[in-house]
Amino acid sequence: MKRDIHPEYVETQVSCTCGASFTTRSTIDSGTIRADVCSECHPFYTGKQKILDTGGRVARFEARFGKAAGSKK
Image 1 (cartoon, rainbow, N blue to C red):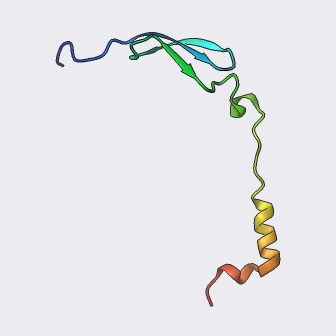
Image 2 (cartoon, rainbow, N blue to C red; image 1 turned 180 degrees about the vertical axis):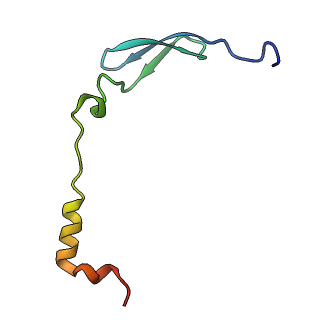
Image 3 (cartoon, helix red, strand yellow; image 1 turned 60 degrees about the vertical axis):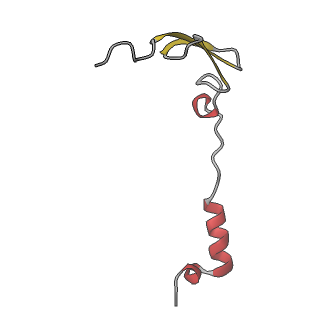
């Protein structure tokens, strides 16, 4: 490997808009990263995720046009 071409790998403080912060390692020069979402406030990790019901749309389409509407004649 060539010497002195790789960036410095330093400890970095990540702070979220929700107020949570944690330390990780990164090659960013400033040593701080501001994030919009993190595992403390993201709906997937907090369990507040909404599941869209696409099955109802399919059933409504089949009721209107029948199951054969998608197949070619």
